[in-house]
Structure formats: structure tokens, C-alpha cells
Image (tube, rainbow, N blue to C red; front, top):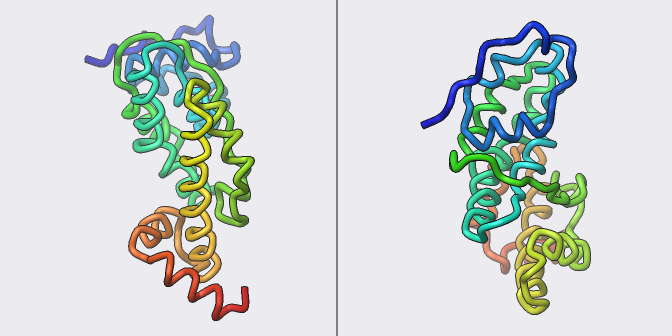
Length: 199
């Protein structure tokens, strides 16, 4: 059961937002935490950075895997679309609730920063490079074998290339729509499109 936050403390009014207290609130699935923050603190809550911190924990491997996959499923895959589509109409509380939904509610964890893939790659503006993706996976999965890293990175680069082609062909589609379309389109169709385009 999610624990509720204490009401807003006036002595806390002028303090900066504490990253580690914020992560603790996410760990305990505190859906009300956002409402206890002052307007100044709410402005300092940056969901994109919280996703990076939230997704990586130290300790139990199954719990590590859960945090990474759940953060991706509940928060990260919607975050960029939401940020791009609603720059003028941001909904930080909704983003907070998405992050809370990602937490298993197992209590305080030791979070560490998970590196991100370059912005142009994330936004499908340019194709991922194998070395960059291998380095990325090495940081996320330091105990994985070199061969596993090579294989996972190769799959990522292949799938990402397909998404980049689709993003160029259909520039009005949102990232999640391209993600879905990439599961339907075959590699042969992408290769044929590139040949037809002179690439």
C-alpha cells in the first residue's frame, strides 16, 4: 500500500527540491508527494532526469531488472512524446504519477544514474552507432558478458535503423506510433525502401 506524504511544511517552503527524498517518495509509490511540494519545488521536478535516476538501482538483480523495465514501460516510453507534444501544456503531476506507477513499492533503494543514449538517437534523428550502444549497455549491465553486450547492441542498432527510416518516411508520426509501425514493417521492406531512395 502506498504511504501518503505529510502535509506541506512551511519551514520547507524555501528549500530546494531534495533529489534523494524525491526518489524515496517514488520508491514507496507516494502518489501524493507532488502535492506536498511548493510551486517552486514542483518547477524543479524534472521527470526526464528522474527517469534516468529511477531506472537504475543497486542490489537484487531481479529488482534491478524490474526497475529498469517498469520505468521504461510506465514512464520513459511516453515521456518524450508527452514533452514534445505539450511544451506549452506540461502536466508535471501526470508525469509524477507515471513515475510512481513504475515503482514496485518495495521501500527505499539505492539509485544510481543510468546514462542515456544521445538525444538525436533517442529522437530518431540519426542512426545509433554500434560502439555507442555497446558502451551504453556495458554501463547498464556491468556484469553481462562481452558477447551478450555485442549481441544485444547489434539487435538494438538493427531495430533502431528501421525506426529512423520510418521516422524520415513518416515525419508526422509520434515516437510511439513509429515504435508500433516498426514491429509490423519487415527488414526486407526497409531495405527495399532504402534502395528505392538511393541509399
